[in-house]
Length: 374
Ligand code: OGA
Ligand code: NI
Image 1 (spheres, helix red, strand yellow):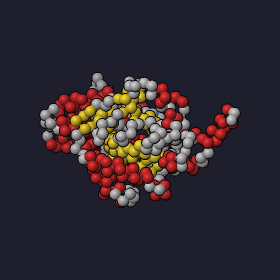
Image 2: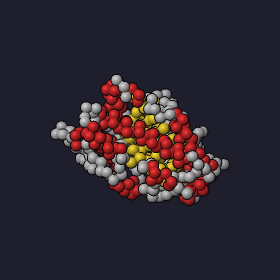
Image 3: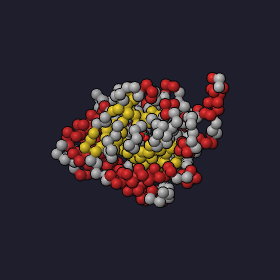
Image 4: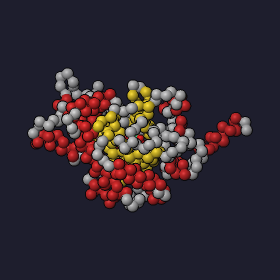
């Protein structure tokens, strides 16, 4: 075959799917035995993962700081708080071990999400929605209405709070999904609240000497806060070096609690490099969202991360995203602002964020940048 003809046939293979096919997501492409990544998924060269080159370098893994949750509750609390501060300032990420959420709950949650993605397309399709505010939303890529490039990811998003309001809206199949999601979301919510209390303490905004009324006031709005769970499914990709599971982004809320798969894929930006997270089994990978960066007036960083895909194995992760109630305005804590440390961010709220992501492609840290005061 002449090079011209082979290029032509390759082009045909990459273009052969109709737009309509892409709307069905990447599991569908994988199930149909796709051999080439369609053009729609090919990222511009500078945005590609550069895998071949990076795989020659040994040190691309990053060991995230480890926070021992049990120790945080004991006599070493102040030391653990120091590690927590360091993690939030330097990495924007940390891992939590000894968190008290049973391994069974964790594996059941991951397992039921895996089974959801294995359902026939027609069943999953019932939950497909373009409404960003829908309490249940199944979809593909990042924002499938707006994305120029699609990414190699299917997802299920569940609004989780308050559980009784949303329970009956969650998928009825697999049969145990609602019960597992209810139990898991309650457990992660409690963990989030305990972590948030430690973070507030590390910022000097909460302490055990405050009276109960003061303590409650600080924590109350987090207790009423919003929670969303997202299960991401990254099926095997025939040419992982051409695309991404998720493009570089930072998460919108206060904290995201991520349950990683044994298959690696998450990368974070650290000292201008992309490094792969090597998670401890059953630990939570926690990351700081835009709202905490704003609330801390820039002391704690919401760091860019992205997801690589691979040729061999499906990867399923579950993320739990936490913030204040949806209608609440997020602003730098007045107690962290003074003459030497002036306010660095504008007010923001969830509606502004939704408007932003619905109207344009989420480009890196664009949203957070748009909230910065000059
Ligand atoms: C996210 C995210 C990481 C992963 O859902 O925001 O960053 O490993 N997920 O899928
Ligand atoms: Ni993220």
